[in-house]
Length: 429
Image (tube, rainbow, N blue to C red; front, side):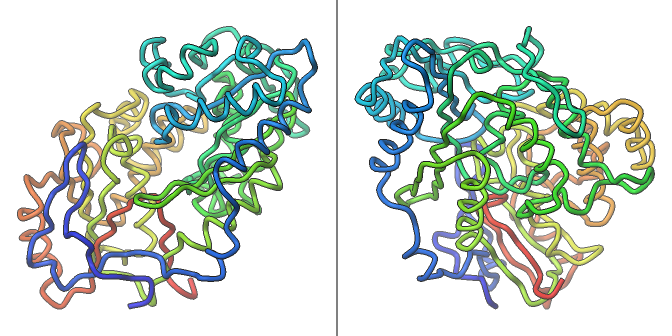
């Protein structure tokens, strides 16, 4: 089948371990994008060159007595910061911005704020010794930056809002609401206040009550995506921001380029999609998907993104095996509260009355578990699985037995070992 390759080692990531795939799935295929030589040849230059270019651009934007905000992903977005940051700080120093003028802020959004020890460990001792590292708390006092043309009041972390300029390290990935991660998302929701974050995310709902989620608020879509457009409006109110756009794939050297959070980010996202898209000729009967192991399966909020990624290529009533440890539990108490509300209509009514990001995740999750049968190899408690409409399996062998009984030996199935890192599509849909 197009867009597929043989299983490389027949294992799937689950937490910090790898699990062998049962022999009965030997004939199934691993979903991987076809290599595009033209796209590969157009990839940006070396990492060090991109770091130097980004540092020089940021240094030109910040005044001689102003501070620079250095924004990095938080612990839910894997990036080799201990090796990247010293190189970025060296480049900034060479460009005239020493460490004592830099404040580092993790783009935590509404995730649990990182403690100072966690943040120091996350960025590595080399960076922690050279800059002030300041955790982000979306509920802490924030500095107003203005109001967007569409009426969103924007406020942000003081160290960012009061900086003369910012340099942000953003990983290009697919995002199930905003189309792509990186770029403007390092600012909003990354270092924004909760009210700003909620107002941007609220745009994911259909304008019509009862219409569920907006059809263009999904992975791989920027044009017409209301969440992306709201985030761009809000991000334009921030101090001048330079991006170091990064793409990191297992076993491959990262590619990177300097640019802005807007037009340059959109071009980087298009390039990323050209090498991370999997197109199938027809919907599958069943799919086995790993969320990608830690930290991508640390909780249900993160693991849901893998389920969201593969759902479009599974037929109605088809079967999904979700391989996600979720050792940290649900990840957001609002998600658990939303699941307990019951039917989708009840969740959407609550969302329109008071939008909360966790309730939206509940709506998105139940949309999929209502249409598909979802088996979960996970540490999540039984009560939560039942509320989410998922069934527990004890092992991959157990899942294989259930799957065989449900869809039969002739089923069209596949294995997706990279979860939400890829964009899965059915041709001509």
